[in-house]
Amino acid sequence: RLRKENGKSVCTFKAPAEGDFARLEVECEAETVEEGVQKLLNAGELPFPASALLSRMMLVPCCGARFSRLAMQVVQADFVCTLSYDRGELFAGDRTAPIAECEAELVAGTSEQLEAFFLPLAEKYGLPVCKQSKHARARALMEE
Image 1: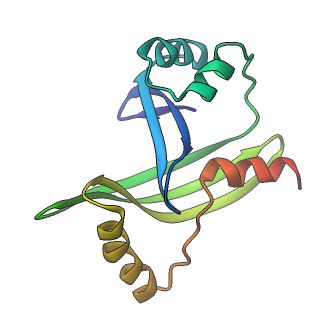
Image 2 (image 1 turned 180 degrees about the vertical axis):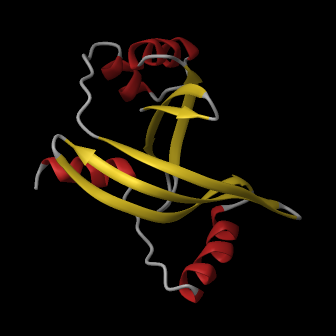
């Protein structure tokens, strides 16, 4: 994916990782997806199946998200996470869907600590827990 983050253009490769909410993320600064993919491939940090596919594929934008994010870092003794609130929309072709969600991303510590921090907040404020990424939900709009 390509996004603007704090005034910089960032290309990110994301893939599932172990655990319900875990994601592998590798990123670099890039102005275009093509430039970003080349930098990510050259860095050698992508898992083999992904790097082999990306080196031979033509990428075509199919969906995306436009949103504003408010974020803060939560720091405890041996645990750090970024707590974010995203508001905007997902899109695919001429279809859109609104988003308004809270997200907790582990920076340091364990996934158990992240769940112990975030799940009580979700319960207290009646926030449904969604395991699908924004990308997966945007892609689903293509099939509606």
